[in-house]
Image (cartoon, rainbow, N blue to C red; front, side, top):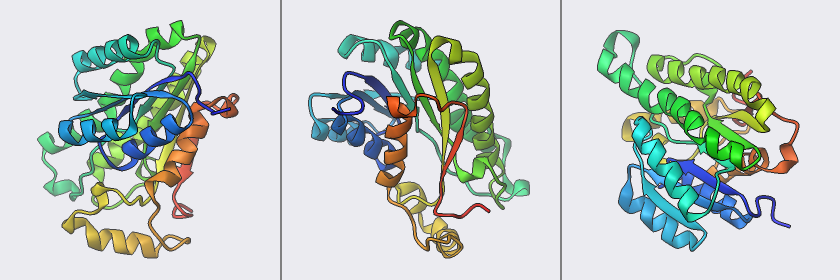
Length: 245
């Protein structure tokens, strides 16, 4: 039997990269999925490619009203939400002294505030569903500092902390909450010209000696969303090829 048969999931940042890979993996495992992103054309293409078990909704994850609309759309299309994957995020590299307040606040809104809003938005639906699983995508930068990543690391450390608090608060409702911490993953975020030198150095410092594919993270996300991880909550799961000590 498919591991996510009959489950309804929302996956943010699903127009490409890890989010799109997660959506494909979820549907293969029997879930019905609402993909969300600000990239409307790309998101609709991915949903159409996946088929009838997928829907796309345009979504600014930093806006509470958008979250309400997404949850309502998921319920209308498929039923109560049992899985949330907070995958949407943005990368930003800049030395502390060169980072503006506006830049810092935008990274926090997209990477951190969105996770707070998403977890809060699905609670009623997930409770009606009899419980569920929330997977918050953080980063290795949410467990260890990195030069030039003040805003990014601040937001990802916050995701790690919020996950642990939510896991304790929501356990009585049958809702599990875990964080996933990818290292270097082959997505558009690391393919920017200004990132290539940093990526080469990080790949060289990774014991497995390479960049991971998005599907290698999806395997873990599917596990955490499924009943196979029924006694796992509040945990930080690293997918980094051995990069962290």
